[in-house]
Image (cartoon, rainbow, N blue to C red):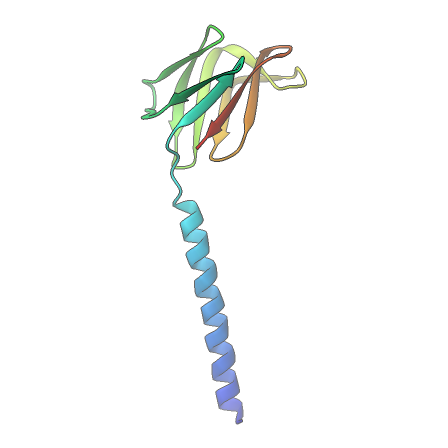
Length: 117
């Protein structure tokens, strides 16, 4: 084979790999959540059609408001402090991401489990 054909094959292979990577990356960013699922004390609650500044979620007498929303995450805010499972104060806002299981606690051993599906 001559050097021109080999170079052309290498360039074509590199472009094909780049196209596959870009296609995969754009598809993964295009995912949109359908619902927020909250599990608290063995009971599941599902919330759909979440809108910024209008949706109030009540869990353990704590009201959550959606303050930010993207295709793959939401940020919930509350007036009460939230804690992680170790009892550390995490503030009053909490980000929930698509297909990631997250935990917020109101006090020791009193936690809710959240996920976007």
